[in-house]
Image 1 (tube, helix red, strand yellow):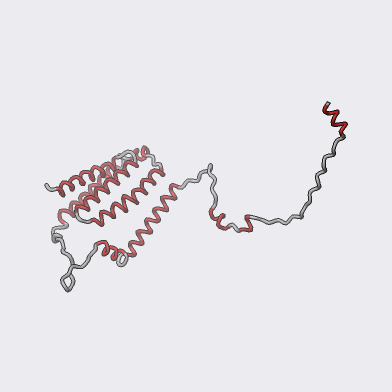
Image 2 (cartoon, rainbow, N blue to C red):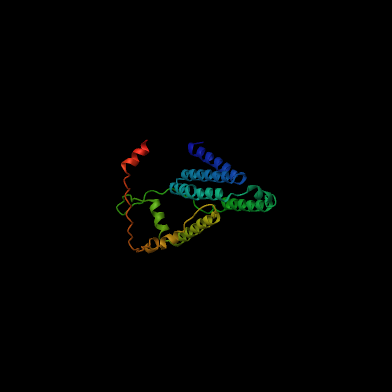
Length: 225
């Protein structure tokens, strides 16, 4: 067994363990963290298949953005797992049926779906008319397809993610009565004349303070004695 096969079995074993812990972990935060581990191991398998771009996208998009959002949503929602686990055994037959159906479909596709398909062969570098190699980039070609032929599906996916983010914020938004909040709309609509009002008042002159009268010398001497 070479190193590539060893890494494949290592990534696969950790991936299966992480996927099992996703559905069996009692703490939802632990389940999300195991899902992040599962995505990272899947990215490692993509690297073994020489699909570097897909592996990087899997790590950046799912592990770096989506799963972090899941962690914050799960922590802010404060899910009561004891109440959810009360009906676990009631839904177990349906869950087992759905899982078995998915496993059967995947096995049917893997066993019979690829028999008539030719095996993929590595392609050499593209050559021009003069026989020289042409600089080719898979990432550049994927970008061209994404923003030309598949532009509308990507925009629809972006809108769906935006709606999901707004819904998550709306679900976790709680108005607290012990905090003082300022309406930003009122602050923006305020005018300078509403903030400061100049009032013209008549000028007033204060009365002069009378000077102290000097006491006679005889009275001052009597006070000293």
